[in-house]
Length: 337
Image (cartoon, rainbow, N blue to C red; front, top):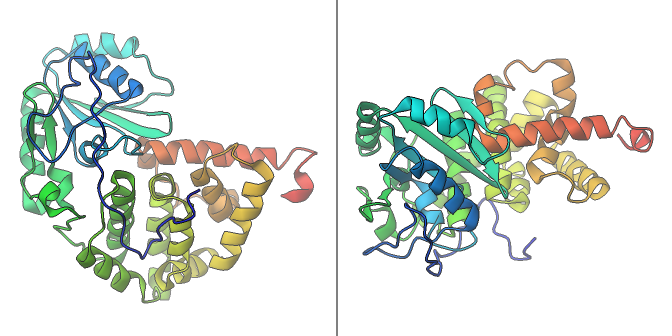
């Protein structure tokens, strides 16, 4: 872990463009114009080669475009694909070279070297409608949500000037606290993963959001919002940011009211469990085990939403949190549970 890791309430670092890698894959092409160069690692080229096996029309979306502009980004790929031949798609999926694929409808997601990747396969009409939707100001939260890169035409659409802003640009602010907290966590995670400054306006808004304690009646929905974004946040922003977030009045009061947990105790327990298992499990898995371990044994209603399985970070962390629980039942570790 870097010693100068930024915290949840500190503005992030500058965006750095990665060096250009000359791939042979159909979609992996250099940008002719723009603020930087898109580069792809071997796993990402494999994904794009897979997409090219059943379609020649695709867009790389949102934060994943930012992530391709610097070499060590944790941003996974989010690709929209126009599909005219769904039987061909079905045949391609049956031969997909990825492990642990989760499929829902026409979307598939999986993890690769710690990154969360998603491919959305859409009919021509739905593909056009989705691109139109992300270009509508009332449909997005951050300016970078609307970025799309066409890897065939080598053109980039950035309708709200996310790249020219040089920092995280907030477009739409939710009015309800749980939804606002999810936006704050995603914004920080995207900024950290893409090495993009959060920006003064976003940082001030976030600080204002988390400075007040959650009302007792709001503790459950606020804590739920925090827990649901926690695996993603831990993976992209890092554990020091998680610890910083836990120390804010909003989140600390929410988990105290909803789960009876004190932030300081949660952080201490995370460090204890991490020391026992080393790097055998992701930070997201350890955080979920620490925060939800006892609750899961009682009642998962309100905490474990089936739709969360679409989130690769959540899916992996939930599976590994259960493995931690099982490991603590072994004779060697039961006394340390």
